[in-house]
Image (cartoon, rainbow, N blue to C red):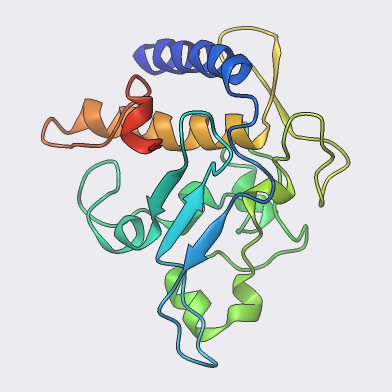
Length: 197
């Protein structure tokens, strides 16, 4: 019940914030840096998100999330599919409502850091904005921006890239702080902890 209330609060906050900063995450606003050797695949170390945001861009340390104890329990790294939910077989995605999409639709592998290094072709990571486009834009891979039913009712929420990032990142941070009192993850109430001008 507390999670439903938290998600409802976050959704309302996200919708209000969406009106304020509708250009938060542009479809061309992600850049990355990586210490990749020629011919070797590695996940990006740092991603620059929301470069068009009125609150400032977000520097996301991808390397920390995939190598340090950043999961909900603080016992290990965040698993790739926690964020890259389409990077697993459709049968696995179906177990995680409201998620629905695997990409490609006939995918047989589940994304892991090990898979990226050993078989980059099988790993295939698509950009979030390929499905979660900006408001008013058509996604590259889907006929329309995905929608989910509001957790506390029947209203539909369009998961633009801004909604998807905020729902995924901030709600995870909220859960981390709730579960671990020692955690310093920025929560939904601390926008400028992530957005820096």
